[in-house]
Length: 62
Image 1 (cartoon, rainbow, N blue to C red):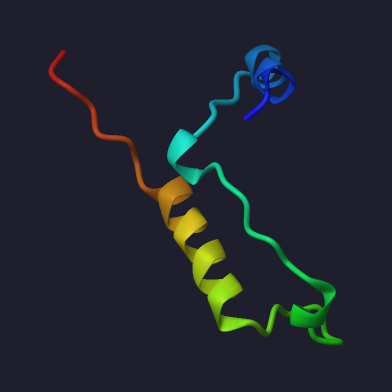
Image 2: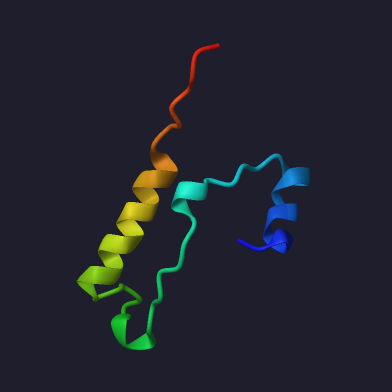
């Protein structure tokens, strides 16, 4: 992730979820006329990103 993207979350209070960062290329040919991604591999990658975003981080001892 570039420094430019890292500068944005600070003022908004957002947090970067490093484990969910990455590239998932979506070619026009993998999107149906209804806007749904038809490529199973792309759908699996996107699902994995969503799981990482929705999984609460482990907290260490306080």
